[in-house]
Length: 390
Ligand code: GAF
Image 1: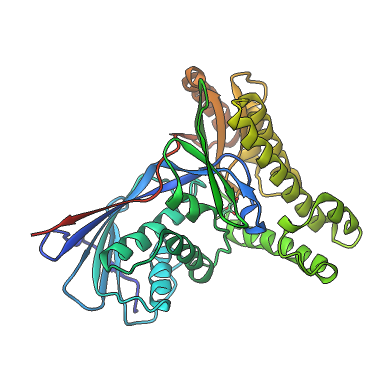
Image 2: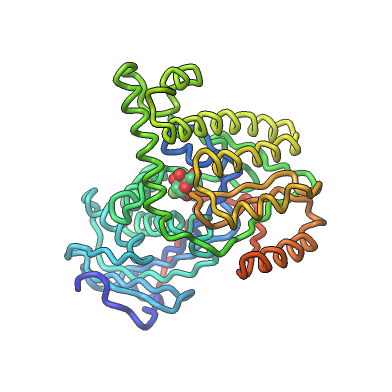
């Protein structure tokens, strides 16, 4: 097969050919604004201090590429000259990016890449976007391709849309590359404005609770939500040709179409419009330091995702409900695409340890599943460094 021969041993990036490129490619969190990105709406993501680390070096071949993950002690190799076959594994994120680079006519040669990850897979903190953007950034530097950060964001998104088959929006790739340490971004997904708001959370911290479930229809259900929103836009556009996304309609317009749209589709649209409104309020709450208000908006976001957008699951709902009567938790909601993964919680720092013990016990008693926890803070977007080898 052309692209998925396994590579059992780590290639040595030892130092005899040219330059070594090191990339730190972070995962992301999203405080509020879920499933709004592909609807041209608003979100509040940031990169985090947990990352994928990648090392790149040219090898002496014109087309052999060797990729090795030290985290999973496995690798694969592929030839640039051959057509890539999909594997349905992590390899697809690498191959998808290389495919997009080839489609742009980039001049690539054989290379070796070693990957180490501290991002759990399936937790909803975008290990996939981190891998895509890390590969794209590393190859851009290694082969002097001259791509801008925005080119890298877009081609990584295309890799996921075209090769992996997940019709994701731009939020994950954008925040992994563009974030600023210590800030939350207010991302306008229509014109890609990114306002940095200082992440002043007072005596609170951000805590992720990983359900450790990933309900297996995640990709198809995600794509299906996107299609439902696009169907609504198509219908409304017939009368209002300037409408290109749900961002272009307001509540009054949506009300007019309530009888025309299927009830489920109307419900999806209503969620998106409400969520956009919440994000703007949340940005204002963060700017003015009103964290209680911010937290309440997180809870409302979860309710919308659970009831109207229907992308939550019992495990996520349990964790959010469990937090509700705790005064030291300001807000809690599912994060990311849904159907599993993490909740994000704004919680008073000195309550974190006892809360983890309490919620982990309750979660295990209910589902028989171990709860994982991840402390996160807003980190810098992609960091690239070069080392010249003698
Ligand atoms: C996933 C997607 F990749 C993002 O584009 C976004 O839509 C998110 O789900 C939901 O907000 O992470």
